[in-house]
Length: 287
Image (tube, rainbow, N blue to C red; front, top):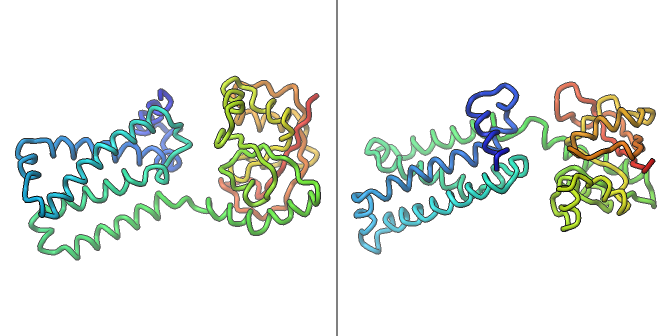
């Protein structure tokens, strides 16, 4: 909870280290719908507004606005849950579809109340559609982000499967499931997504890597999140360990040896400027 509140405060104050598109399209869908829903409820609960909602039962506009008022309540509950119980990096526009649609519907309803808009509805809707496209192109479509997943699935995954042949490794996959899906290898999710109770307890106790190796998931894989710049099959264990420490905060990785077992040829689209265009699988062995 406190982490999300801190991130939102830094986002709103324009902190250089926090104001980025990654945070913007994860936190904005939580902030904006909550503000709009609160404003809608304040406006709808005024005596004059409540009297209007008591119109004829057959009035479609009255029913529509009653539905929007109920959706506003649900939007506040959902965004509040996300704020207090869901890590910011595990949510985004895909996590809040109803609140996002609510903002659009509430905005269109407010426009409909304006006489100038009612006179030219086609022009207004066209401008709204153009604005939505502009926001998507500039903020909602990370450049090359999805292309990297596509490149891995279509191209790199086949080379990885050929490299391991009939002995597929068990992956500790620190991703959203992209590597596990494309490779078809047995996988344990390092981002805590879909972990069992024991795995979650190990994560909370800062021994997730130790549990994974104990279970036999002794290869680390990440299509999108690992900076593989400069990693080769001759990279020393200590250097690899330093790259992995950010994925296992607070866990002591010194009891393990790390080595690059598979290093794909350059060709994947890098997720950040200057990154090496390669996917690696890191073998983990107890000392």
